Length: 335
Image (tube, rainbow, N blue to C red):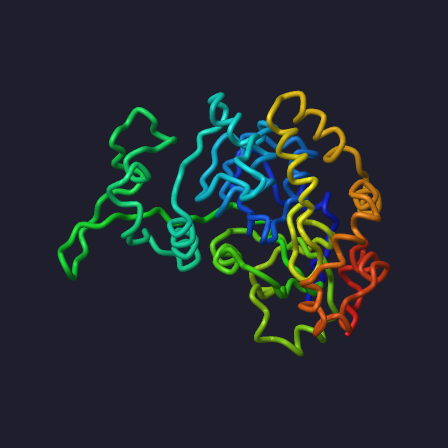
């Protein structure tokens, strides 16, 4: 099977472009998100992104604050205990970003529709509310008739709504474990990453750990994203930071508050990008930026036991580096 391991910078170059419809996976602090890929989009100066997030997390908050995203669709715009997403708020209130609002269930259904290649998704939620009547993409049309148009149920004759399916150009999906071929195991809440992996036109996995293929053979029933769907795999521990990755590390609550406060202003955002986006050159310097003591503390998690069945198959960093080398495609993957 092909070795799909590539560097983060190469993934950003190959699988992103200005104006693309970009989606990421689980976004709440209790779930994982490929936040480091969003940082890479800023490092590569991407702009005019149409962001699709089941829920707003710090990645959408950052992309909005930096002006990289000019359109967004999501079902929840806060950061739980951290408060409202300040970067997203500034972008919307200034008119730099049009935020199309749906409920959480609506976003899940739209991703399911994209995964199943449906022409539209029958909608029985969001109907009769401003979620249906107001559209950020057509602000002068009220009530909106294009966002969730009315359709007739051919069986009952009742009038319901129709959601447009979501089919992002690229999805960067954070996973706990992946092999070099692109088979992935997710620990913790999924937040539609299963459906997103089927709905997106291209999928890049951002993995906290790379495992020997023997792990996939041992637990084939736990592979939620198979290699058939995956274009590339990036190895990047603490890829979801400051979010959490169940089994791997806890949420960095201190940085979550710090980050959201910084994104509340233009100067704070510029300082944050300087210090936490542009300041590292590789994985080691990224981990140094977070702080090795903090990494040890966050890794001492009450959820660490979730990783126990898989630890024997986790490849050491030097082996992953060998497999990620430019000429590694022809090399045999450890078995």
